[in-house]
Length: 121
Length: 409
Image (cartoon, rainbow over all chains, first blue to last red; front, side, top):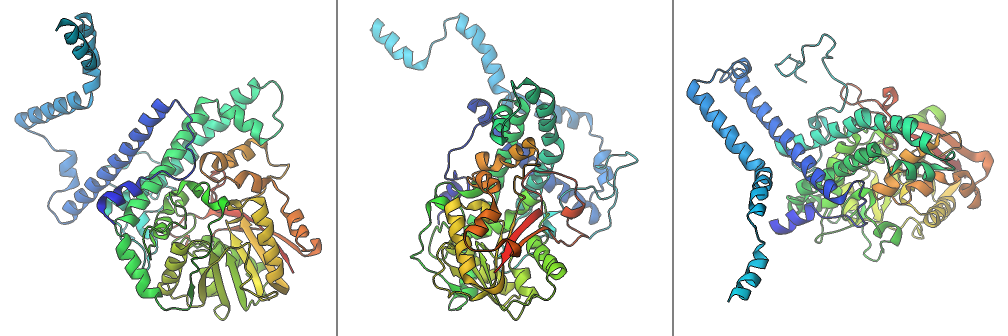
């Protein structure tokens, strides 16, 4: 079995039509969000294991983590990382905001540009 | 187990219990030779899903009940006639919709998680199963067995491919997925080896029929044999036969049984509605466990008829199932128990729980004076796993407490 087959098969739809309880658009986003929530818990669990192992081996104590004081530079680096992260995940909010001005300036759809240019040609 | 040490993650509240209620860590689940290997992330995923199911049952579902009582039922023009009226009315309520969407998604995530774990090592598991079963007369596969419409139409409990789909010759991944990840749904209520129901049946027998000493035992719809192994272990001199439609579960079942040291079970591919391979009056006991709800009425009647034919005089037929919808069961509870029928690919759950099983037993020849009715709860290792008998949580249709219905021939 190829990896591609296994990946597709693992997420396969069971025989039988899927019931929807909410608007399909909402339920689709919710299903993706819940899968991501699961994966966050999985990543968090791994981090927890790592912290406990580091502590049990005397490398880094958990109290050290809880009371960690970043330097000013480290705080700035971390703040910048959060800003980068937020702008990445909230991309669509920014773009929908920019769309207000773009629309006012006469934004066009890509598919319409060729037709528009053809008229001008 | 490690001693519980308070860590920075525990709330400082005075009543924080040292061991909170809920599912145990997945690492407590018992393993065997064909049990799939699980990574740290895969274990975390199953732990998360078990906790999610518990959260839905204990923290979300009660709101559905209050929504029914406080706004759905009062808004109806007349009292609901049956559970279907209740379900239809509930289906428009936002709380029911949210709970249902989350419950469905959690089941889909459980299947995805378990299937990836099984599929990514499918060939390796098939090799291990083959090593344990090749040439063993206790495995009898019959490629001529057809998968009937009541099994093939929709994949039961939203498990893609159900129990019978083989992805390549010798594949056991369907069984490996079912066996190792059922924990996400049961939260450990069926115990270390998912055998709590079988152990419960053995306890029921020892309390109610202490002299019963079966020599030949049949389970129909046995899947991987998880409920049958404690029965076989309790009667080590009995010849025990597990019948199922699906080759993957049978192959895996024998490998699993051998690896767990249970030697007296054979795994046979056959359709329970036609067990002509076995003679009349050749069994002391025919068992089904959480199986009747997978059957339409016709196949159930045919299976009951086969049970009657196969039993020796004095032999017993026992079926362990979630409780029937008795008239005294509130319609709200019936509607909630029906959820799996409409939203989790258990097409016959609703009709099966509504029919008169006593009448069906009488129809195939059992006599009323010899009917058996009882109750069974899962028997688990209580130091690690939650005991259904002490558990107040109601997760309609998923609790490890069942009715026992049957008859003596």
